[in-house]
Length: 401
Ligand code: AMP
Image 1 (cartoon, rainbow, N blue to C red):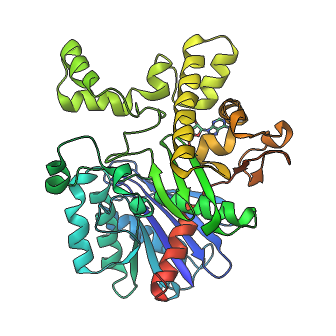
Image 2 (tube, rainbow, N blue to C red; image 1 turned 180 degrees about the horizontal axis):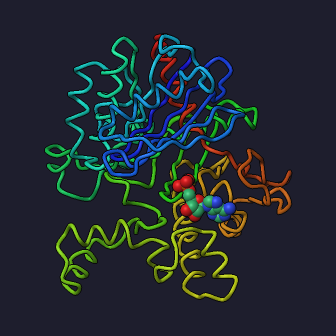
C-alpha cells in the first residue's frame, strides 16, 4: 500500500509517501509559512534532487493541493494519480484518555478530538485543520489518526496521577499523558528486533533527546512511565523548555519580573532549558559543546544539568521496572551526540553498563554501542515516526489494530 503521512502544524506541514510493503519512503517534503507571506514547498523524491518552490498558501487546503501536485507530477512524482494513495496517516498530538491507540477518522472521532483541543491548544487544532483539508481534497481516501499520547496510555494510575485534588482529574482530565509516544513505540520495538529478543520480554528505557526531550520506561511492551506530563513542558530540561521545576517559582518570577501567568509560561517554554541556563547562548547542543570546549562555564553547566536530569529519570525507571535490559538513544541529540551519550553513560556504571567509545562515535545510524561485557545493552536508533504512522494506518485498514 502507499500511505501519505501528514504531520500538520499551525503554519507548517511535513509529509512523506511510504510504501508499506517495502517500508521505504518514496518522497518527502515540507510546506512552510502557511497563512503567512513567503510560503514555500520543499519536495524530494527519494534519490532525487530537492526542489524548493515559492507558492501562495493562504490555508492548509492550498498546501495539501501543492503536496498532491508534487507527488502526482509526471516527471518527479511518485504516483500517477491520487487513486494510488490507499490512505492518509495523520500525526495527531493529544488524544487525552479517549484514544489509547490509532483510529480510523470519522465525524465522531473528529468531535472527540475537538474535545481534546484544550489539552493541546497549540497542536490539536492544527492537526484537525490538516485532516479537514485532506478530507476536502481526498474525500474517498481513508484517514487514520495516530496519537502522540496513545502509547503512554498503559501507564498505571500511580504513575499518571498528580499530587493535586482528585477532582481536577475527574473534572478537567488533569493527569500525566506523555508525548513523543510514536517515537517511543517505534524505538522500543526496534530495540527488541535489533537484539533479537521478544518485545514482550524486555525492559527498555528510551531517551528521546531532541529539541523537545522525553524519556520512557517500557516494561515488556507496555509504557509504564514517561517524563512529559499533561503538557510537553514537563520532565527533562530541553532545548528551550524548562522541564519540571518547583511550581512555586512561577509565582515568584512572575512577581519579580512583572509577568502574568501566560508571560511566565512563555519564559518556561521559550527562554529556558539549556538555552536559558547557557545565558541565551544557544539551544543547539553543537553550539553548547563548542562553547564548553572553549571554556564557557554556562554552556558546560547547561550540558551537565541536562544530563543530570536524564540520569535521575533512568534511576527512577530502573526502580519502577525492577531492572533494565536496554537503554536507547534517539532524536537529534540522542542520535548525533557521542559527548552527551558518554556523559549519561558515565553515570550508569552501577548498572554494569559499559559503552565502546569507538562505536559511540557513530552519528545518525542504528548501532549497538555497549561492549560485549555490558550487562545493559545501549543502542542508538534513529527514530522513524512517519514509518510508525504508516504501519498503524495499514494495521487499521486491515483490521489488525
Ligand atoms: P530534533 O528535535 O530531534 O530534530 O533535534 C534537534 C536537535 O538535535 C538540535 O537542536 C541539536 O541540539 C541536536 N543535534 C543535531 N545534530 C547534532 C550533532 N551533530 N551533535 C549534537 N547535537 C546535535
